[in-house]
Image 1: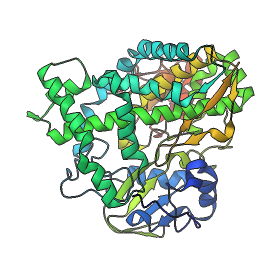
Image 2: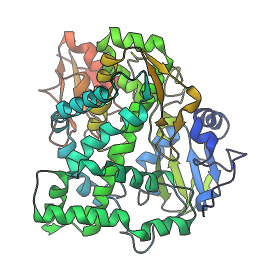
Image 3: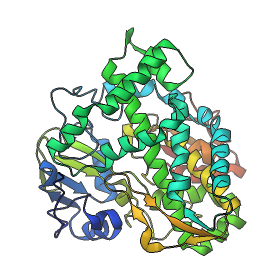
Image 4: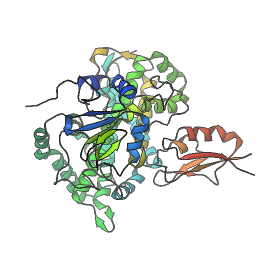
Length: 404
Length: 69
């Protein structure tokens, strides 16, 4: 039933993040665009733009006047009249604009502050060790499927207070929202109309109303803005946001870092023998393999460096491309575990800085520490079997490794 | 001549690089934004830390300036 997109032949005028070339290796595409066409265009998705330099990506990230965050995942369907309007959007605060954005964000920030997140480190470490115990003795296994993907799921599910056994359901939701971006509008609407995700969140909200717990779902159910409880769509939207943004992003970052280490014995050995390098190494992996590209909708017609943006056009914010811009980072394609100056934009720039950045950094560091202490030596068992996710969050979805 | 660090609160978005890299000079507030400890004076043996905090702030929110004694 799918009407998937045709192959891209010209990346300057017909780009598509659902194209196999982009999915497999977008870096050469962005590099060429940075040199020849810093704002690419496509008629796909009903019209979209792609600035690729650090300067232009920053400019858009800081501009909340010409761009709205009302929708942040580019697909064939734009927000409709049944969705919460700007400045709230369907999944606050990521889909919110000023001034509501600051209100919706502020209430969540304490739960994701550095002290609260460091309290989750022992649980994260136990989770990593348990996962490694489960593959102990196997000479070959899949590091993305059997290790990376489970770590952020277990942590965010614990924070939200959902049942751990529902992890498979969350991965299906994520696939629907993040990867099926090239379904036709009718197909995408049909998935929403099925209402599975809405029904799941409603059941969790009801369960938490009946039995209050010390978790983020209970917090959202009880939270107030100016003396009023949050709108049901706001609660549900934020839960969806935390679940989706908390899982496939970090899963991707852990997987991509392991993919790098599997292919670079010198970095692997250096990290094993100089554990004090871990902090700069984590930042460098985040820079070089930043998983997340964001999207905006153009809020009003205007000229952006010669590109004639029209209200309602999509615009992609490829932070991973900004992080590879030689104008901002010397030797951007070289992974330097001890890079001293690293103003990377992996968590975005401006008011929408990733709410979970402390959590993501902690999970990535702990996941790598535990992996390296167990498997200082490992390699890809079948490089051709490595597969990457489609869409705006990039990471390995299959990563077969051979361990020593 | 002593050096002093400052954070532009309008630019800071709470990436947390400063208090992670230079915990003797910066801390986090309840919302995760960076705050300068004390009056921001940088002891000589913390000058490297101060430079690293500046060089890793994605928002260019931190300044390191030489102050008249």
